[in-house]
Each structure stands twice: as C-alpha cells, then as structure tokens.
Length: 400
Image 1 (tube, rainbow, N blue to C red):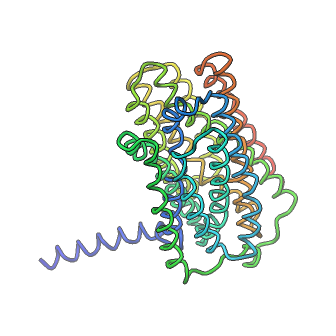
Image 2 (image 1 turned 90 degrees about the vertical axis):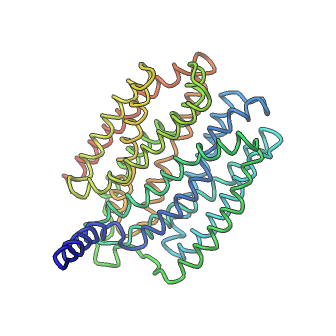
Image 3 (image 1 turned 30 degrees about the vertical axis):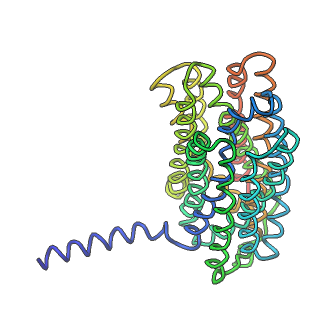
C-alpha cells in the first residue's frame, strides 16, 4: 500500500511539473477572457443564412461589412496597444469584453443593412481594445515558456470562436435571430468577474526595462516581415471562414453539415494554436511557421477538390496549420520589439489582421461576378506570400 501511494504521489508530481509551464503567470485567466470575447464575435457566418433573406444581402455586401469591421478592429489596435503600455491594461480588458459582447448581442435585432453595419463596426472596437493588453498580460512569463503562454492565450480565443457558430447556430434554430441577445448578460457578467480577478495582477511594462535594449532598425524590419506573414494568414483564414458554410450549402450539404464544418475548422485552429507555441519553444519559431504555411496550401487544394470525409479531413488540416502559426507570430513580434510588448502585439494582431476583411471582400466580389468556388480558388496565393515574408524575416535576423 505504501509503495502504491508513493508511485501515485510520484506520478502526480511529474504531471504537475509538466503542467507547470502551462499554468505560469496570468495566461490561463487571459485565455478564459479570450474565449468569452471570441465566442461573442465569431457566430456571424452562421447568421448570414438568416440575414441574407431577411435583409436582402448580397455576397458583396457581406464582404464589405466584414472588410469595414476588420479595418476598424485592425487600425485601432495600435492605439490600444499604445494605451496598454502607458496605462492600465487590466481596465481596458474588462471594458472591452463588456462593450463588444453587449453590442454583438443586438445583431439579431437590426432592421437594415446599414444598422447592422454600424453595430458590428462599433463592436469591433471592443475586440480591438481587448487583444493588445490581454496579450501583454499573458506574456508575463520566462522566455523559455513564452510560446506556451501565448499558445494558451491563443487557444482560448480560438476555442471560443470554434464553439460560437455551433452554440449560436443551435440557439438560432430554436429562437431565431433574437437568440443573439444571450450574449448581453454573458459579456456583462464576464466583465465583472474579470474586474474582480485582475485586481491583484501586476501591470506589465516593456521588457526593455528588464535589461533588454530598445528595438533597432533590424528589429523593425523583422517586425514588418512578421506582420506580412500574419496578414497573409488572416487574408486566407477570414475569407474561408466567412464563406465556407454557404459554399458547402451551395454544393448540396445541409445547414447542419455546413455549421459542423465551420466548427470543425475552428476547433482545429484551437488545437493547432495550443501546440504551435510549445513546438516553437522546442524546434524554433520559423520552422513551425514554414511547415504550417506549406501544409495550409496542400489542405486548401484538397478542400476544393474532394467531398465527404476527405473534404472534412482537409478542413481539419487547414485549421490545424492556421492555428499552429498564430501564437508563434505574436511571440516573434514581442521578441522583435521587446521594449513595448503591448504595441508589438497590437501591430501583429491589428495591422496583421487588416487583410482579413480584404480577403472576404475580394472573394465576395469574385463570387458575385462568377462563382463562390472561383472566389475560394483565389486564396491559393496567400500562403505563398507568407512564405516569402518568413524568408525575409530569416534574412533580417541573420544580419542583426
């Protein structure tokens, strides 16, 4: 009995030691906040099925709305990153969760395209405000575990985005568009809980204060290259995510299958983001990014040319590869500009996400003039742009 208890204690001790890097710092709490925020923002593709007949929307109008929403969320992120480095990121996190979720809860009640556009653009400000301070808070850990910390932060958001279309889709099936209102009390309650938990958390400052030199011109060039990598990935991801359910329905699939495919895609992104940062801690940042972009290209080719189980396997592969690179690009940005981690995070998540709306707009315009399949075929170039930018980053780093 004593020996058995000793083995159990030893096993628990080893498990605890392995999990310790994942529990370090404030990353778990920021991961939970990220989950709630993204759960309130990523159900829109499912609502399009009901909004298109109600408001008479075209693919082009949807693409334009996504573009403006993305522009707002992306262009304002550097401002919030700057405010995060100089103010209290905890306060920004709390307010942004409450603001964004409460507004998105009103989506189902909008009477026209103009009102819907205005609402989602204002809600995007909340998402923009959240990401830089939350990423800066999550990155407060030792360098050896920074990839894991950012993976944990990323997986929370990706998991929230993954379950959002499934849960809201079920709610829409029973309650219609008015079911989006459930997000209002959820976001307000989450904000209040965050305010309570964040009171004892230290405010992060730039790593330059901890002995790191300010970023040089070479680091700025590296940061720019990482922003391009992120932009290429976001262009691809947002366009595919926006039109995947409608494309599957147009090819004979049911609404349930279309929603499940989108959920599978987002779950895969979550799983990929969970392991991407940890793998980069062990094998290097650039190898993870390079492999993910190559496999993304292969998965996209299979997705558009197969049906049934192989097609769902392609959806899974693309999602995994997109997710794997997400935390790595954030860590690289913070390491390239260590004196202002909030601002660096804002640039890679804000400016780097700027092309996402453009991708949805371009695919929508192509679809209106031809077919949605042709629009999705046009995404093939995006991972190649990312690979070129990753190569530029490698050259810049070697010259430092």
